[in-house]
Length: 294
Image (tube, rainbow, N blue to C red; front, side):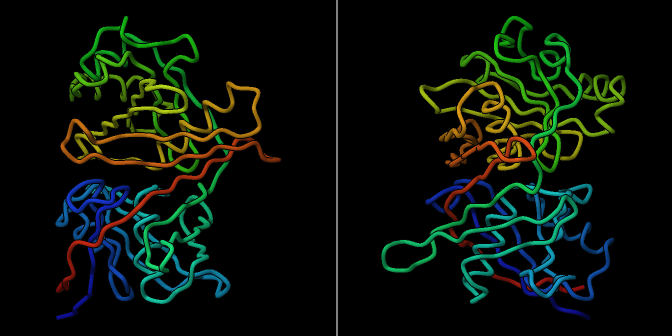
């Protein structure tokens, strides 16, 4: 029998049992793809990461990310949490992860006394936009009225900085009352080839100047609701900057409140030579240590 140490932590929070839980298998050498997927399903978190030696020795690690049902090319809170764990193991404060979506650069954050607090990651890709969806189709998926979908700034649109989400602005009251409808999700996924079989809807509502409240539903992937979605919020920050004339914008985003796992994310978006780029950061709190036996 083989044994693999792991740690868990809560990401995008300063309070244990808030934020988004993450499991990190700190040395995944010898674990097959099927075993990684089985372990991720067993942990039953939004994502689990598996740390491997990098292909390029100039980089820190190769990081593979699995949700409950498939491997992810990129995700936000898994990178923030994995960086926090590796920095605590002495891997440095400037890390570079190799992932399916590209290289993810990380800056570790510390308190005045040098203690680890969290990390900020740069999304691996510039903003790309895909299919625009009808408000009534999206509304049926999330249990709100079509009139609750706000289209003044943009229609519901597929956006990615490494992995795609349908970004949808809604009225504040509708955000709190939203709930996914599996049948409607399947209908919209099946009739929209541009989604490539994946439908994750990220809702947001304005909450003051450069403050947003968000919720993310991806029930067809096993994530009924996600407490904190760094990759979706990074795409959102980049999208909002693209609609603006400024060179850079910063946002404070609250997510997970309706789940009882409040999360705080810090976002920045900026114009680069290849388009809109985004960074996402937040704090982490360690929770468990253990060992997986295979």
